[in-house]
Image: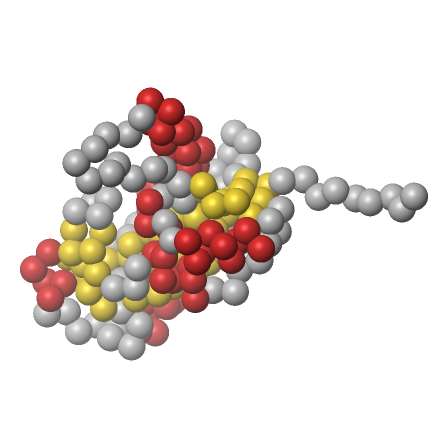
Length: 192
């Protein structure tokens, strides 16, 4: 009989974080970093903005902020689902927790082939209501997703990365994003 190692299941979290060069009315006329930035909408903040989104996949760590293992930037107009679809992400034997933005059969199928289960809150049906079981499931998923939201809040408090209104070029935007992110991750790893 062969001795087989069974890899433990790892919970991972996926979400995005807006980096805003201009907000509200200024988002429509902003011209900074047009090579990588454009106008998008942040539903969580109910704000139109000109900028990019930092997309993150991170393993969940008990009692600690997640430490990202996948990071990439995309223009603000690129939907979270489209951005994840474009990435070659391999997350074998894990559960991936996301928000309702990642609801798509093709993504679920692709991840299932890697033995990864995509879990996100149920959407309320039009003109209907969620069952008590669905509401309980949504509360559970949102509770398990909370660390990625806490990571983004911590990242913004530590670096003020979300407000990039003083950036004047594509190069400056990239330096701001990756430089501040490097500082923050080092701070997280070494507990600064």
